[in-house]
Length: 408
Image 1 (cartoon, rainbow, N blue to C red):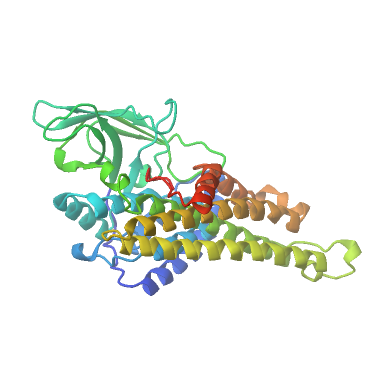
Image 2: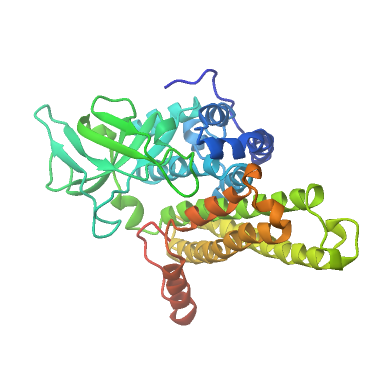
């Protein structure tokens, strides 16, 4: 998989945000049709790569803009308001670039970061079906006769895999081998390597075009130079989990923004006023105006909490090598968890209220307004906010720092 043109080099936050806004207008135009037909956004993802928006976090030492998490989150939110599937696709791309930034080997980092600067894309092959919990991993690395390893297993929820040049595969090494300790590793492999099968079998309620299907791995050759130990990112206060979760918050906030904007456009152009209001157009119905005010406050609240969470994650990244890192990462994780709780509630409420304010006409399938609710409801299932509330409560009550497992 190659790009038709070299990627632009983004050099500032302002440039990144302006580029995201421009692309969002283009992506929004075809979003409902792509969702309805389940037409995968290959061209759109190529444009996202070519615009340089997938290289925002490449460290300066490797030639990148090294922009902070808060900027990446706002870029994702802008895209999610236009097309939540497109915003979801690069989530794991940024997460695994962050893994390399934190604990990657210099040669591997240089190779992956260099490819990303040229427009390359990384996707996850992490989760599996059939285990007792999501933490159960059956994909295995096995020593090979040539001094390397072979990779065998099957992954699901591999978001973005159909658009990827590189797959980041979570696997377990059961026994020490080839100079590596046992444990969990991320293997960075070519998406078209022999033994890799990427299957387009994602069939979900929402986020239909994320390419989140199955990746099957059969005797895939892997060098130790392609492996990164995951423990380095999740056994110390690195902010790895807070960064990943921040982007999830941004997706929910973006969907809520998009739903509110779509509701407004529908009411302005298609809704009829309720006869008891005694007005000529729906936009003059005082009860409808009040409901829009309530919804706007909810979206603004979610946006404010996202901004605060982004600021906290920026601080955590800045402190990651000093004595204050544990406290900074704890504050960031709690701020992000708070953002996820708020955004979870807001995105489902606003995307549902879209039909309340739009009236019966808004339920007609041709407008595709249901995609906001379907996308929001699907994405909010990613990890349960009830556990985030537990962590927030423990921190508020007794000052207990949240765990470092990478999903808070």
